[in-house]
Amino acid sequence: MCKKMMHYKRYQHWSKKEDVFVVCVDEELNSGYNCKRAKPKLFYLLFLSFISFSFIFLYSFSSEEAGLVPKTDINSCSSVSNGTICCERSSIRSDVCVMKGDVRTDSASSRITLYRNNGHSDYVLRDPDENDEVLQHEKIRPYTRKWEKNVMDTIDELDLVVKGKHYGVRHKCDVEHDVPAVFFSTGGYTGNLYHEFNDGLLPLYITSQQFNKKVVFVILEYHNWWIMKYANVLSHLTEYPIIDFSGDKRTHCFPEAIVGLRIHDELTVDPSLMGNNKTIRDFRDLLDRAYWPRIRGLIQDEECEARMNKEKLILSPSSESKMVTTEEKKHLKKPKVVIISRNDSRAIMNEDSLVKMIEDIGFRVEVLRPQRTTELARIYRVLNSSDVMIGVHGAAMTHFLFMRPGSVFIQIIPLGTDWAAGTYYGEPAVKLGLKYIGYKILPKESSLYDEYDKNDPVLMDPNSVNDRGWEFTKRIYLDRQNVRLNLGRFRKRLLRAYYHSVANENERLRRQSQ
Image (cartoon, rainbow, N blue to C red):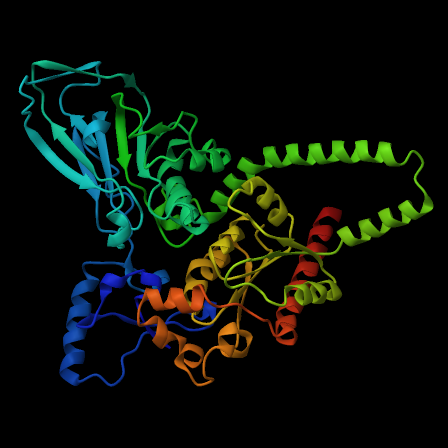
């Protein structure tokens, strides 16, 4: 089915009536993409062929973004001359500028200056009237939603300038660093879990991992809560204190600066764009190293509390308590399902019945209701120990990154969210090594079925509603839709997940016995 590239306001600037890109997305995740136009006129077809042939020599396109997003050369600024600025601006997602030499911050004027031919000493000499010759001037908003003008307009803009050697007033380095800096913003959509990982942490990993923690992070739109929330992860990316660009008025001096973050695709790392062939699994390994020290502390606290409670309640366990312990051990051997529960829109209205059915199949079940204040290490612990994660499409599906490769991710796909569900979560989950099962609900499984006529496009042709714009998608399909699962239909997906999980466990035991 053909769709205009204006889903979720993602590439809305391409959706002008006189210049519309049209793509076809197969409903099966792994079946690829097929793009067609119906019966074009011969002249028009020849014209398009000529244009397409010409572009082949100019751009290399990635098929993972519906064949339309160009793959940029991640090393285009890898050999920057000392005293110059090199900016990568070909990506639709973000701009990145690299500065090498004597780099100095000036937060009061939102400026980073690179002084040429001065070396890296404590002072830079300038003319008293401060009318220094600007040899190069670039502007950049260091955030990874470049195509979304509305959000980019909220991001602080930086002036990057190169100046020559002058004499006069001394410009002092208050803090001198001997490692590079990475400048980026935590504004925009920060506060939404998906965007915090997709637009922030993953691009930060992609951009900074090459420095092996020998790098300083300088943040625009700095938030203390963000630093605290991701402290465990950030400590595995840098071993230096993080700088609040606007709040720290001192002049910081660096031998190199990367301004802006590189981003590859939705919630993933493209090894072909990484100098060391890192993948999304390497990022997940970093999450594992980041969260396990805290998880071990939680386990020790729980074991200590359990021992204390046991000593208080029972000195000599009864036969009944032994029987309960035996049953608990049997229960723990069952494969584990975690349901990511929603309390607002897109909730599963028959969640209790779903839990019972899952238990009847042979799983043990944990219902997870993450809040904004829930510690991520606790969520990581729950999902890292699970075999299956189930949830309705939404930002919380970002938690699939916490699953072990080989486990199962079942995403319930409400009406009108097919493309986003597959693009933002389904395809990235497959790249991580998960078994992805997308459950596309029928109109009768949607709460919208009770609100609209049975032949209304809202139920029968959601794509036509989405084509009307993001505000319609959000108001109808995201904010006002809940799900009542057809349990008989959904059971088939659960059985697939169960057999897969049992096979995984048997294989693990077989390897242990060898």
